[in-house]
Amino acid sequence: MTSNEIKMLLMKKGIKQADIAKKYNVTRALVSALINGSYFKQCKNLRYYTKTNQVVNEISRVLGRPINEIWPNINRPNIKTYSI
Image 1 (tube, helix red, strand yellow):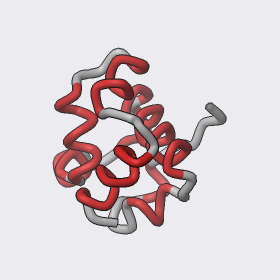
Image 2 (cartoon, one colour):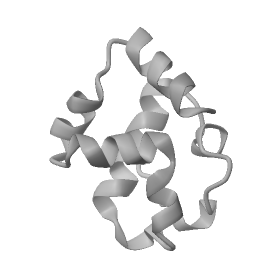
Image 3 (spheres, helix red, strand yellow):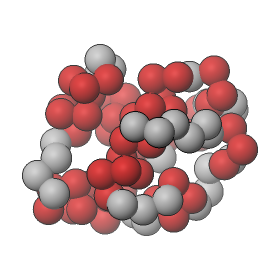
């Protein structure tokens, strides 16, 4: 999915990036970087980034789509899925 598609789906569901950031005590800039995919280009291994994993899983849960459909180009084995 493109970042604009992700943003549109979040908006249709009434979810703001700031809401997700507040829920997980991260910056809105981090949520934006995840949505835009720029975070994944900088980070080689997401296994150690619990908050990041939680935010990725939250976006996936809210959109009702699997992570690999939202971000097909990320290294999927490094993302841990959590039951949220």
